[in-house]
Length: 176
Image (cartoon, rainbow, N blue to C red; front, side, top):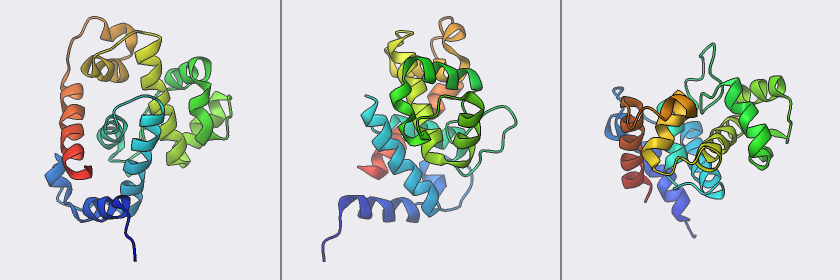
C-alpha cells in the first residue's frame, strides 16, 4: 500500500496541537482545518504565492475556516466586500472555486459557506495587492491585506503581519 506525502502531512497536522503552531489554545486541528490548509497551499501556489502564505493567512484570520463568525469580514480569509470587488475586477480567474460568480452579494454568501471559495478570494486578493498595488515584500503584502493597500503605504510592518509570518514559519516546519 502506497501512502502519499500529503496523507502523511495531513496526519501530522491533525495530530499537532495548535499550541505548537503559535495559537494559545491546546486543541488539535480538525480534519476540515487540515484540508483547508492544504487547499490554501494549492490555491496560493496557483496564484503565484509561497505555498505557506495563504495557509498562514487563513489560519490567522479564521483558524483555517473554524471561526468565520464576524459580522463584517467574510469567509476563511476574512475579506471585505471591497476585497471581493477587487478580485472580481482584477483577478476573476481566482473565482474558479466560487462557480465563477461575479455578483458580490452571491460571492459573500458563497465565501462564507464554502471554504474553498473563501480561500480562493483571499488568495486572489493577495495577488491583486502584489500585482495592481505593487507590494513586493511579503510583509508589506500582509500589511496591505489587513489594512488595505492605501493605508499600507504608510506602514512598513504590523503586529498582524508579524503574526502571519510566524504562522507561516511554523506551518512550513510542519508541512514540509
